[in-house]
Every structure is written in structure tokens, then in C-alpha cells.
Image 1 (tube, rainbow, N blue to C red):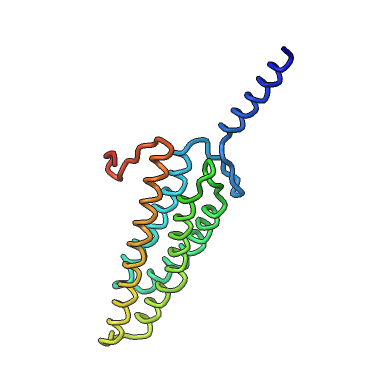
Image 2: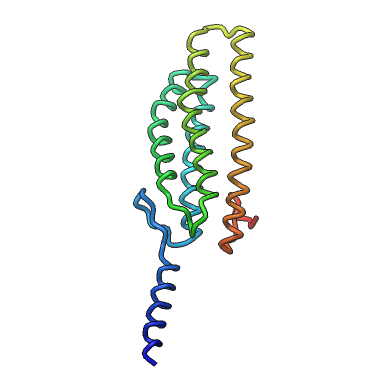
Length: 176
């Protein structure tokens, strides 16, 4: 008869521990799968605006393109560290890990490829055929790598959403 209170207490503690929000070393507490998902995707969208800002200036205003890198790189670096500080969600780290790969790519993009493009544009008043080919090669490499990383991130996000019984919505609000 005395075993029932102990069994009940163990069950309550077990279920309370299972429903505990995930909290990472970044200090953020993720109370739901949706919050966890949005934390990653919101940061990715912000980085996307920085990338568009750079590409909006690279052909027309090299100083503005260089400033876009200079002003964005610290935030891109911080966002990568925020994602690295996320815990696994209910033991699953695959979505977070795919995001880390993508954000590491974004950081490298700002730190290396974009700077190289600016250097080529800045050092040449008139672009030679070789300069144009180098820029195109850099750009093609970026596109190829980003497409693969985006595909992987999307697949991991979809698997995360399915596992956590969460629907995904695209940019226009349509369900995926």
C-alpha cells in the first residue's frame, strides 16, 4: 500500500522532466518545437537580408558593398554562435546541426568570398575577362554550395516538423 505514493511521485517527476523546455548555453529557453524552429529560421532570414544588401551594391558601389560586409560580419558571427549554443530539441540535434553548417557557410561567405569579390572590383578600374571569370567562378561556387546547404537544412527542418507534429508555412503563408 505504501508503494503507491512513491510510484506516483516517480511518475510525476518523470513526466515533469519530459515536458521541460529545452534551454541552451545561449540562454534561450525553447518552450515548443515552433519556437525552436523559428529561432533558427528568423536568424537565417536576417542573414539573407545582409547577403542581398551586399549583392545589391557589388556591381554599382564597391564602398557600400564593402561596408555591407564590415557591418554584417559581426552579426553573422554572433548568429552562428547563437545557433551553436542551442540545445538538441528533445534529444534531436539534426536540424540545429544543419543550421550550424549553413551559418558557418554564411560566415565564411562574408569573411572570404565577398571580400575577394570586393578586392577584385576595387583593384581593377576596368574588369578584364580574367577578372570577370574569377568573379563568376566565385559566384557559381557560392550558389552551388548554398543550394546544397539550403536543401539539407530544409530537409532537416521538414523532418523536425514531422517528428514534432508541426506544420510548416512558406513565406507567403501557405502550408508546406
